Image (tube, rainbow, N blue to C red; front, side):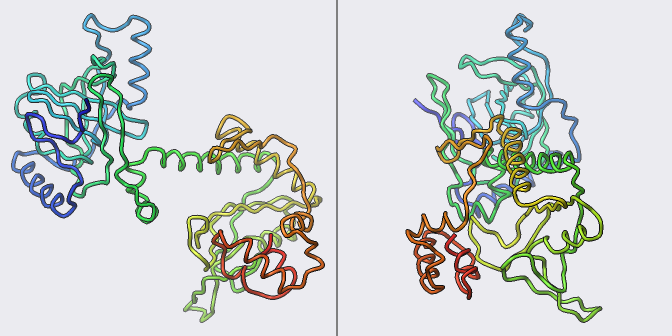
Length: 401
């Protein structure tokens, strides 16, 4: 038998995201009631001393060492987080709080928090931020829980988040969460909401941060100097792409948002710097898909006294170090497939790879044939339109590749 987290028991449960407009109205009414009761719905600060994952780990360690109290309780903690689940049981209630480290269950008892504080739970909704203090214990289901002695409203959420429904098996305690935000397009448009309700997406952001940090550390250690070059440029270059155009009114000059960093980085090499890199935003006024965003981050680096063989070796080392740092292994799993990033990487020549894909020598094909074949090959993918139209064998080769 399962019990939904947002269902009703002997007392009203905080409202979820069933009807957005009605939910907002209900939450506004609760906001007014909170103020009538003298409760500040948007606290200025809260002295949080503990985080969800850390307190759970500390409790398990104390439990293993036999350091719990006679009643099986751990140390008193003071946590804060977003309420993502609520289960009412007459004179008691359970809620799940989620902070930046993870999720932990909290337990309210009327005779412990006080009658008024317990009644104030009726004015909470999923998505509200609360602070809670109390001692840790393990429930009969085996879940580490904070037995709340006092709680504080930190932020009243006036708009419902698309939180998924979590069901708890009353026999095993096993939890099953059904996504409340399955619309892919909406998730990309409202990334903040996606982050709020999907912890795994936050992990992607953390991984990206570690990738950027590792790349910078690697290049710094190899003697590269990080620089910043102009974003607004009188001439765009360094790539084949359509630029965004703007105007500098004081100079009465047309400018372009850069499409690549290459040309200015090479000028720094001319100026006497032997190794430079830039990790920055570039802009290309082209197609929009989950594979390509008009505003994106690109890493470019240039080195004197080196050729493309040296740069391939450097990139190989960089990719391997990033994979190892972020995942702990140079062999990563992506979409169910194991990919080895253990050096050396296979080197292939562009024309040989094209010949294998096209089934004939691309150097013997004219531009029209190359372009037609490339369009067929790339039809399942979303490519910038500028790559699909143009003249010259070089353009056709890139299109086919």
